[in-house]
Structure formats: structure tokens, C-alpha cells
Amino acid sequence: MIRSAVDIQPACLGLYCGRVVLAVNGSVEVYGDCGVCPRGQRTDDNKICRECVGSPDRYDWLYLGFMAMLPLVLHWFFIEWYSGKKSSSALLQHITALFECSIAAIVTLLVSDPAGSLHIRSCKVKKLSDWYTMLYNPSPDYITTVHCTHEAVYPLYTIVFIYYAFCLVLMMLLRPFLVKKIACGLGKSDRFKSIYAALYFFPVLTVLQAVGGGLLYYAFPYIILVLSLVTLAVYLSASEVESFKDLLVRKKRLVVLFSHWLLHAYGIISIPKLDKLEQDLPLLALVPAPAIFYLMTAKYTEPSRILSEGGNGH
Image (cartoon, rainbow, N blue to C red; front, side, top):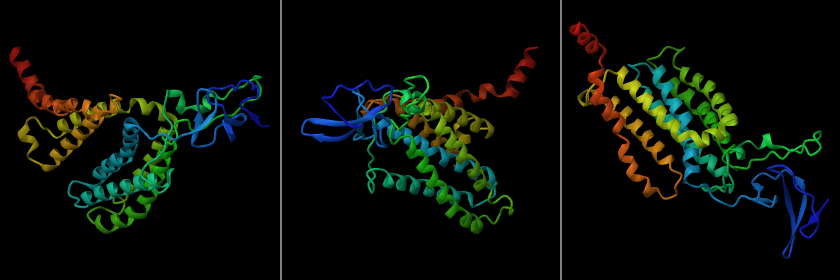
């Protein structure tokens, strides 16, 4: 049944139900029945389905970057975990993982609307419920449910799944042959363990995005800061780094430190939802602060020193 804008229309119930614009006759729009909006559209204030013509803002891109980093960081962690200290293949595997995720990200942007471009069009995220439209399907008579589930945050929800799919495909195409050629120092059962780990964490990441995508969207800056601070402290403690001199003993420690500093910076500039990056730059001066504080106070928290001073006190 087709209605025009001049007709008296019944109220379109539901937070995300809308009417599709079927035709435009001059200044008059012709609408369809109230229902689900097509992919790439969301309802406006008048319950009309409008096409998403905006572009992701800086915070949206930072969120997508965070979701893109998750599989890469996990790849690097498990490659390091299973490669062994004497393995010379870890660096090449790290580079390969970075290549896989980078190509997957580029291909994902190219296949997204508009196809063939690195730019994407999107709908603006207004509130948390935009991520969970399936929870807001109305039941006008308390019997029949009007299904209006659609991607109100297009394409921030589904584009992550597409990216993970490409990451998995590229890993399965490239990594097994590479590992078989270069991981000669490992046993046959160990050399593919980093790949097996990815076959476990990709489903976990997919479920995490499906269930907690909206929560991650608002919380990811704080997640980055907390996890990067904790992991840096654990690494420095496990490596028995107690001074700036200890950091210079091995280049790997500096790489880990600078990697965590990059994560600190990423989290800091993600917290304020401002479009002007120059306003956030002074906050980057805080990036080295946790590591400096740790190195300045580590010698005072050495367990053997505390025990010895406690014994001398008695």
C-alpha cells in the first residue's frame, strides 16, 4: 500500500521503524508502509528512511582502527609466544601478519560502498541503542512483532566482520607456506601453533563485535589505555627492567616500549571526541609518563630490598 506525504498516516511505531521513500513527485514524497529501512539507510526524526550520505568522523575511524588492531596484536603475541627465543623466523612472521592485516583493511574499504574507493559513507552514531536495533522491534498488539532490525550505524557494525573474514582468508593463503619454509628451528607440532591460535581468536573477536560492538565503540579508548599500561608494567617487571640502562641492553625491550607508547598515544587522542586534532596534541606529552614513573620507582619496590630492610628494622 502506497501513501503520499499529504495523506493522513498512522504513527510509525518503534524506535527504528521507518517509511521508505518510493518516489518523489515534485516537492511531494511518496512513502511505503512502516517497516525496516533498507541497508545503508536509517530513520530521521520524521520516521522516514534516509540514505546514509555522511562520512565517518575521526572518532569512528579511530574505533575502526582499534578493531583492526585487535587481530594484528593477537597475531604478534602468539607468534612471539610460540616462536621460541632462538627462532629467527619471528620477525618475518610479524611482518607477514602486518601485511595480511593491511591488505585486508585496504580490500575491505575498496569493497565497501562506494566500491573502488578508500572512502566510505556512513550513518552518524547517535546513541548506544543504535548498535542494537534488534532489541527495539515494536509489538503494536502485543502479539505480532514488526521487525525493523537494520544497521543504524552503517557500516561500522558489519565492516568489522568483513575485515576479519579477509584477514582469515589471507592468513590461510599466505602464512602456512611461509611458516613451513622459514620455521625450521621449531618442531613440526610447534611451527603452526600461531596459526591454530588465530583459528580460535577470530571467532572470539567475531562474537565480541556481534555482542559488544556498541559497548566497545564507547569504551575502546579506556580499554587501550588500561591494557597498554598493565601489559607494559608486567613486561618491564618480568624482564627485570629497573633503570633506563636496563632498557638499552636489548633492542627488543625498546621496541616493546615504543609499541606501548604508540598505544598510549592512540588511546589518549581517542578519548576526547573532538574533530580538531591539534587540541589533543598537548595531551601526548603524557605518553612517556607511566614508563618514567615505573623506572624511577622500581628500585624502591624490589621485594628483596623490602624484605632486607624489614629484617634490619627488627
